[in-house]
Length: 470
Ligand code: NAD
Image (cartoon, rainbow, N blue to C red; front, side, top):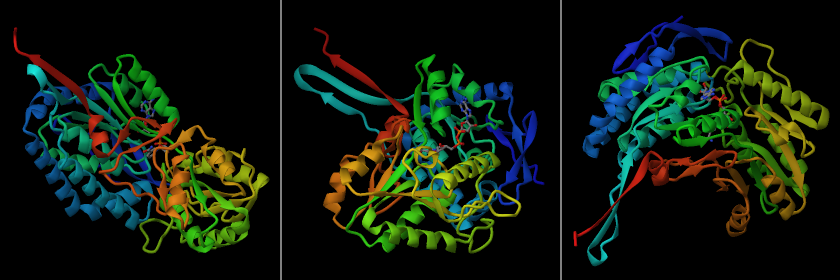
């Protein structure tokens, strides 16, 4: 079992005060040990980031950009090593892991190229008003286990280019790719600019409450996000929350149900459904309901469910046992209220495997429809009236994403305007781009990431308003 992973504190690797096992979800067995921080090491990491801030923020932006570019270049060279580790700790098929790693290089390079120039707001009558954007200080980045690397880059890119320093804390079930990434940070950044600590779900709250943390960039569940927000309130810290979702796919009546079933299937089952913006409920017109269900069930039955490290695997395991049990519970409930037309039984083997499962004829109040399943289980629901389906799609505490599938894009766009989520994709899915802002409405988040708006979240406006002395 590998015991070589190290945290990064003030430019030095740290074995921590203890360690814990990291499990390969494809086997259910531990394959590595992860070093663990205690509160003293957490303090040291924050202190290092605080000490590194003045010099890092004072560097010309081109130098910070060059460091980020160098990290991206190294990540590209080592992409297959990172992807292989990602598959082992997270479970996703290797090609999807490669997609995540390469996606990281796009995000880093996009932010390395972004600039926040001072904005002149007024020059009239001898009054010069300029808005500068200044960095915040130490940013704590707390990440979940579904996309441990790219969700980190969405924070690291904007935080570093705008002059902040960081303490990163990955999820305890997927800490290793973040620790490997620490090698690149150590090679290309001054000591203390990026620090990485690991925990067993016990240090997140300590980190968010730390008086020297200026901003918390959090991606995870809505339940934990609320705790983060409460913790930030004590010192009015800046906070970005990227939280859960229950995205609806609305299929319009002018499409070929077979074609769209394939696209909705991919949107629901990629990464075994463990995507914040996965399709989590599909609404299909009554007239094509049976055809759509038949086709999506056929696709689910064709999936190759296996260890993500095996070539040809299309659906890997659920990332951890707690999530596996939660998804199983939702399937058992759905079995009593609707009809399972594909999947439905966990695989009788080691690891946390649930095959793609399609459920039809569920009532709208079933937990599988109301809650975020975060697994490869899709309820397909029937509708007759467009106003009714829009109301049902919006009847959720979440408001992250959603998709509309229709041949008439203008009509789909009118429907999209009425969907209360941060993003609506039309005839495509997961078109996340570092240059396009991404954010949730309602309880799916606060603030946002990516794009210039995402960069602004790591800075504050600083207004200088000058007139001649009269
Ligand atoms: P989680 O909330 O359990 O954990 C996320 C992180 O928070 C982990 O690093 C965890 O250790 C840490 N944490 C735990 N308790 C904490 C506390 N009190 N204070 C601060 N940090 C604490 O989430 P998860 O189960 O790892 O991830 C799955 C969830 O993430 C899903 O709900 C999913 O929709 C959401 N998610 C959202 C987005 C988005 O962009 N909106 C993206 C990916 C995942």
